[in-house]
Amino acid sequence: QVQLVESGGGSVQAGGSLRLSCAASRYDYNNNCMGWFRQPPGKEREGVAYIVTVNSFTNYADSVKGRFTISQDYAKTTVYLQMNGLKPEDTAMYYCAAANRRVCYSGSPGNTENWNAWGQGTQVTVSS
Image (spheres, helix red, strand yellow):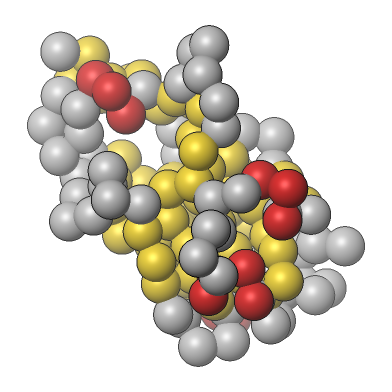
């Protein structure tokens, strides 16, 4: 099973930028759907962005389209989330996750039940 370690969280002011990283163990990195989720305090975890490792197909939640970009360095088995134009409502714990690549193409990639590996999370705080 792939192992995931996130980094890059922090505190920024509204309008600022952050880049999150997710280092995945090499085993089983190929042919995965990799995703970023977030969980604000007291709320449910929600999907943010997804990428298929074999072809870099991407998909985004409507709330972050145009502001967030998911990408990968395949050789380093690392997935990134570039977050620009941050808003206070983006404040959350951000998690990296892995699933079968079919999940990325599905109509509901944000369904957490379909994801079988999770990182420990990294906190993002955006102040107004």
